[in-house]
Image 1: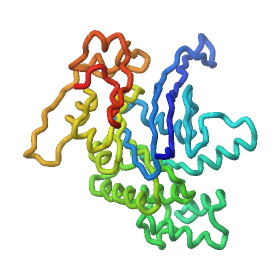
Image 2: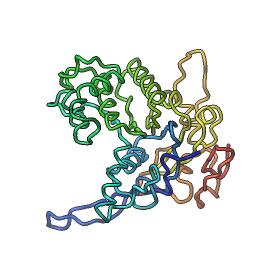
Image 3: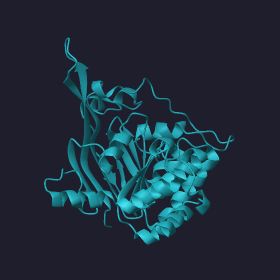
Image 4: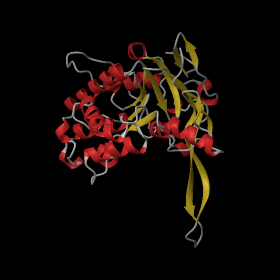
Length: 329
């Protein structure tokens, strides 16, 4: 199967700074590695879900893929182009620019990603015109087509973002992302700020767009129900590292990593008569500046042994179900 997106040992780091003595200037004192040696692929028309606790590095990884953050190591290859390399020539810069057009991001809060002073028509028209998607005489028809794709009426084109509900604003964000005709959408908590019924509508819309337009998704969310509904495969991240990747149905039915098991056990079931065994984790996740040796999960793992405290586990792939654990439980 051809790969649309391939990440090979990608790392993202941030420099932490403190004020120098009696000076307004700062000096770098340490480095925080928010994403550490992450590898996965996304195939055409595939949806990969990415889950994990807040602060585990999901959004940093998404921003690195889209080009908003530099990477500290590894490779990001999209449609055959190595996006991680900085453009050294104007020609290569144009090639990267054309590549990044083919991937777009839908953010969690549409209110902060939409210009409050621009109408729907102006926002979409600006994208279409800057990227030369259609001829000038076709702009109006293309705007109507994009609005219809996301379930918005043509007569909404002259309204401002504050005149829409939260769900409608997210539909508008999706329409603007689709204007460039991407092949990959990165949805970073795109449904988390919506109520349950609106969230279900947006998920249905994303599934419909995937089927009609042949899109691929990297779907980042805390909501395991949403991830399970939309994803073909699911990747689980803990403290900047992936701990498990598997087909969605298989991961939710037979999770192998203790962290994945705890996440799924903590997820509420819609049937109040169905009881699920809770697996409480001891302690809290350590900070990125005080990472434990060996397996990063071992201080909270109920199955940790001496090997876990000293040796970091490697991914072991068994028929498409990969786990970074010394002892599959």
